[in-house]
View 1 (cartoon, rainbow, N blue to C red):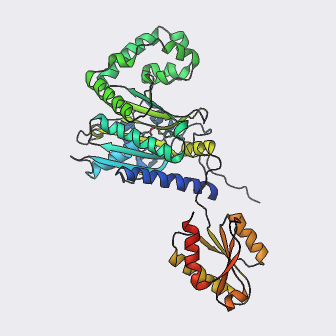
View 2 (cartoon, rainbow, N blue to C red):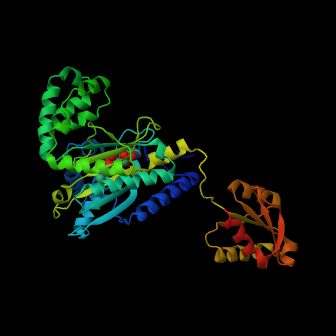
View 3 (cartoon, rainbow, N blue to C red):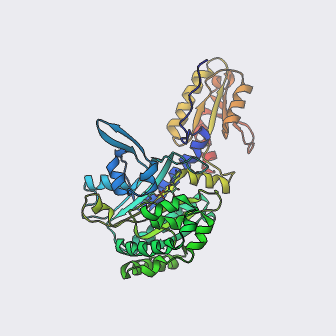
Length: 428
Ligand code: HAM
């Protein structure tokens, strides 16, 4: 026998059970975005490598070591590691944001060559939102309110916390960077214990604030504070955002060490984090990127957005609510046996689908006695079995059996079946 072929490391298949959870998750996300008037955009999974180098930043982990890059016709191409750069590229290319406000969202797979573990994969999925053309903090606040509402709908509101920071403009960060580097140079002995941070001292020092190394974390408590360097405009922007969040009852923690791993941010950055998932606790991250559109060749247009990791959300939903009631795969299972019953069952199933298109109706098609057929209906979790035997076919009736045992089995005329089903399912 030849060796079986397995999925690529860090890339997942989704079973029928998992996709039920995901469909519910996606549906809830779509409805929430729509509820704020956002429009969906779709763009390719493959983009020119330049886009991410220029957009996300050469000195980021993503560009330095995590991209799936390959060459075709002498062009360097990359599987998108995130959605913002592609969204901005498309928006510029098609004039979606030229002199106008836009509220856009997207959903789909992203690719990063990271070390796989629970909550961290090489192919993962993000749902993201980008607002263009609004400079003030109201846009930032709207995004946070939207996410808070979504957590509520997903039943995870009590399990996530909002972390907030302002990283100012480029000039602020340049001055802060100098101060931070000068500070860290006095602690090179500790820095050397954490090779990633040591490397970042020259490439991307602000990211050192993110270190997981405990001794270094302690040292950083005495480091210069970014907020002491903030320009007046960034300060006012941040204060306004906090004011709106306070007024709207959204709790947050200001985390001056939060700088995010992508280079395009300015002013607001935020993350929603949970303790329930171990090391990969950030379920959603975002911020403002007022310079990115111009940097990618468009007219200067402000931007702010976020993306959430769908795998992490799915894990969290299951963690906090293991018995979550998902929509059933099958509402009605139609069993049949005897002369003429198979065709009658086909007709009846189509009639129900015509009249009640939201119900999930499955027809038994693989023969066998009633016992076997009922077993199948139970396994699928159907609420109702409809039974057609020879006598039912002869007198145009059908048996309704409630598989959850909520009502007695009854025989009804086929002509009244639709009303009967409609009553039973409308009560759910
Ligand atoms: P990010 O923080 O790199 O931001 O990713 C957003 C979210 O995607 C993370 O918080 C996490 O939940 C999820 N995620 C990231 N990497 C992985 C992985 N390897 N496996 C599973 N989940 C992962 C961005 O991508 C920005 N584009 C967000 C943004 C949009 N900022 C402004 N607009």
